[in-house]
Image 1 (cartoon, rainbow, N blue to C red):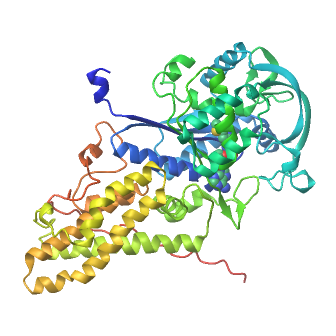
Image 2 (cartoon, rainbow, N blue to C red; image 1 turned 45 degrees about the vertical axis):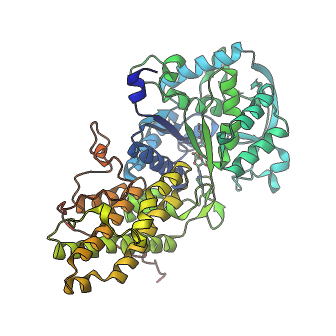
Image 3 (tube, rainbow, N blue to C red; image 1 turned 60 degrees about the horizontal axis):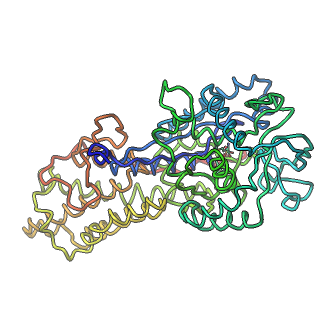
Length: 537
Ligand code: MSP
């Protein structure tokens, strides 16, 4: 390794799924993307070079039918919905680096090259496909898994359709042993454990080849050496992760695409698309003799009244409306704090409002507000002039704060967003208790100025640290806190050079510079009001 290589920051690349464009995004699709963005922000703050990929999956029967029902040209439909996704990501303050669209010409080139590699390997053959197909899942289903009236177990209001046609197949069965070896040798490949076990169990029952082409379907990429067939949407879509890696203006070849960022460090997905990512995708890559992604994490479902929220089920929450009413930070905080990542979680608006008001407006906002007021009064509007290293080490707040950075960092590294939030919030809660117990206002009257300075410093520094640790989740709010504490940084600043470079080691206790002049005080989080109920007249 050359010196310049060793000085290069470590890279971290991650993806969200490429979302179907059968409708505008709902909160379920926003959930994966918010988590991906929080993780990307965490790694950027640590100084890593990060590549966050998202995008849209635009081919296949589901999209073709949606466009037909709307009497629209499919490409015009995809263009409009893809724009809707980008609009939502902007409103949710999501900073992605690449937006991959499977209808792009570049993508068709990559798919063609990949298909031919697998073809030359002898892993594709023509066969007869019979089975029950769920257009919503774009997947064949086992008869034993169907609900009554042949309904899909995921899209419970949709019946599956019988198919009997000639298709090209991919020899998945050939990769069973290689996959099992990989799962055994790389335990981090499938996460969390419950998902890993699901896949191990599935694969151990024996893998069957799967069909990778369709007839009677126009909306897709033609099979390179037999254009009467159209490639199966999943074969095409997974390769969208590779297309996304092409540098702008690079020739669309696999070699160019794989040069800088492959293998991907993490595919973040929902648990319903685990088999595609954990079984089909690695087998396709093995066939093409390409390295495998390092990890796949399958999170849980957001439910409403216990049912998976989804466009096809018609029980979605409109994320545009949520962000308009409550702001990006609030939406991001609720979903990442309230639901343990990996498990299912139900959305409830009353709980949403209660949590945000309790954590951000009351605990965090009030602590900053009251402490700043005291510091303005007792310390001339500046950070108290004390030596942070000479603080009483037995103060519980100081002890807690000293370990908080490491704990939160561990939590983010394993995608435990809610634990990372808890670490930050516990600093705030103990900070509130600490200031009540220490009563700096009485000590000030008693002339104990040095202790007052120490108390206020300890609390302000804890608020700063909490803001820093929460920045991947609520970047706007953290920026406001930092600015009120006198820093000129913006956690959304990704420019080069970025002001975030000034924040090196800010996950440690004792960074707040004594005598730093505070910025303009203002409430950091306005209390949310419960929506007024539309009462029948
Ligand atoms: N197009 C495929 C992915 C191809 S990736 C190469 C797809 N798209 S999707 O739009 O249907 O779903 C995308 C993601 O959103 C999946 O990870 C899915 O789990 C997630 N969610 C969709 N509904 C969801 C909930 N109700 N709750 C949480 N996430 C869910 O699948």
